[in-house]
Image 1 (cartoon, each protein chain N blue to C red):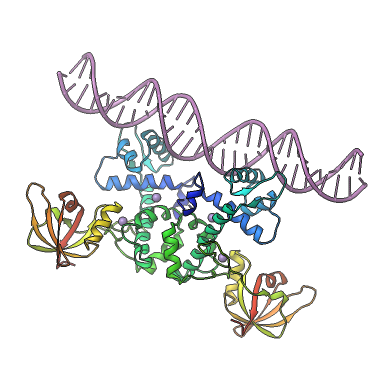
Image 2 (tube, rainbow over the protein chains, first blue to last red):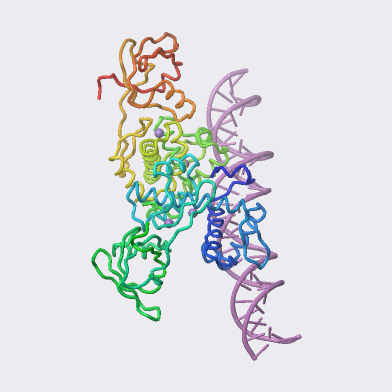
Length: 231
Length: 231
DNA sequence: AGTAGTTTTTAGTCATGGCTAAATTGTAAA
DNA sequence: TTTACAATTTAGCCATGACTAAAAACTACT
Ligand SMILES: [Mn+2]
Ligand SMILES: [Mn+2]
Ligand SMILES: [Mn+2]
Ligand SMILES: [Mn+2]
């Protein structure tokens, strides 16, 4: 767990410390108020454990903690979160492209690997992939200096019927969901044609590689698309 | 740390548990009596910690422990050790071949990665490398079923002067030593010519790629070679 | 404002696995 | 066979970070 940020952080961070920071970052980025229950739900530990950990992170100046308030990251905490997130997404893409691991399995694997790769290995992976900008789900890969690119696109549920789109991001890491999409032929950068959009949040009819499929409204809301012609 | 051996092992093993088992395997394989001090020296924890851990491993039926006697692995313990060793050596080779990580850096990296890769990833790595038999240092890679190939060769210190040899194994993981050998052009499968072997365990003169170098006797003892013509 | 219900924190427990220091055991020389 | 010394084990301590249960604090409704 020796990292380049170790220079500014007293005690070394465990995998769980890192996962907490990453969770806070992701929840903040979603625009949610990171309350204790939101956080503990997300990470899968009890609320008491979350409070406990958040207090420790606050002592290390990685988060701002005020009792009964939402937590937030300090600049250092954000740097650490982004470093782990960079590891995670680089690893997902590497596993997928270099070792043909299916896109619905890379998340789990990266969840463990992200905590143990060195900076040198991170760099080697980035170089071997040609310094990519997005992971296999279209999530932006933070740069070494902590910039996070903005991903274009809008939910398929808000797209207009009778037009062709390209899938640029899937807002889910759920294995079963991704596997299902994969079976429909829907993976990153695939083109689809939006046949019909049922009103009142009804299902969506799409055509992928000449085959028509119906998608639940909630599913369509997770699929970010751009017009097919757009880069 | 979910592994395929989890079926037969009650509690999940931590990275350290796995490193202890691997250490015992390696020390046994070297022909050493695995006493508590040998083991604690090797793993870098205090003797008291080693006793403690060995007792726990013994309760899990992974080692045989009798007070004041050398420890040894049970069949299950050996299986676990070989699984981790397979991970380690596959990872070393993968990092070296696929990501160009120098042979003197792969050990450290693999030491952490070996504990967190899934069986699926292990298989994907093995497949992508064409099911290799040895790692970048010539150490044999155990098979999935736990067989360990026998590596040919004998120490350069016991070779005859005036003949050509090929380096097939280096019995060291020391970063500095490997880096030095690398600088001399000595890496796996490289050919060398043994010019002179000084008596009384004196230095050895070798020619590598047309350049002559003197090696300490202890260094030459770590280099396993075969006659240059031999496959 | 009072109260019910929810969220959060506190208090206290436990397992893990390192450590040091002291006690014990084993070995080998006198 | 005693004695010295090294190796090993035991005992006890500590940090970590999960947990449950209880207390406290917020929120929202009457
Ligand atoms: Mn993780
Ligand atoms: Mn992803
Ligand atoms: Mn290890
Ligand atoms: Mn090796």
